[in-house]
Amino acid sequence: MALLTAPDIAAIAPQERALLINSLPGYKSAMLVATCDAMGQTNLAIVSSHFHLGSSPPLLAMILRPSTGESERHTLHNLLETRCWSLNGFSLDHAAQAHQTSAPYPKDQSEFDACDFEAEWLDEFGAPFIKGSPLKIGCLLREHHPLEINGTHMIIGEVQHLQYPVTAQRGDGGLSLSDMGLVAVAGLDTYTQPSAGLRFAPADTTSPPRQL
Ligand SMILES: Cc1cc2nc3c(=O)[nH]c(=O)nc-3n(C[C@H](O)[C@H](O)[C@H](O)COP(=O)(O)O)c2cc1C
Image (cartoon, rainbow, N blue to C red; front, top):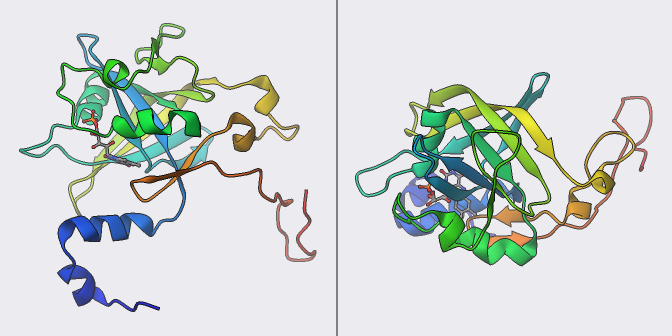
């Protein structure tokens, strides 16, 4: 087993350290965040820092890196300008295209075109969706917290629009992500499609785990 302490970690070259630390949270959801600016210029970027903040109201959050001298963050700029964005799930078939959206395209070049995705506008929602995506989530900006610790931004959105195949919804209301073929990502480069896995009833202290 490798054993690293804080000084060892600090001594790792920046790129290598980024890949190492990015692997630590394990498998994460990868979704494409679609936005447009006030002039209607569309943008698409893969993001894997999504988390569930609450169900009532339905809140999803994500962490976005800050703009720096050498890199503009178009997703951050657009969603602060228009106060809305969409999250779009994708399957392994689209992993290469989805990964390509992480390249630093200039603002006037939409990743929809550069990475071969088709934009779709739904119910007059202010941000585009990806046509054909199995899971489409439209969010409105509720809170924006620049984080003091490293300059990243916590973005909290309320779900306003939700679209998924009827067949993916289970009897208990949850969605079968494997039925939709959604990918998970490890680190910044490894895409995988999880299987249905094992499901359990809510745990309590008086009975053993019950598999569903
Ligand atoms: C697998 C993967 C996950 C990523 N997750 C995030 C993330 O959670 N937050 C973020 O700010 N950037 C993330 N990125 C980087 C963005 O995709 C990248 O910076 C992109 O160029 C941003 O595009 P934009 O400037 O059009 O918003 C990720 C990249 C990859 C490949």
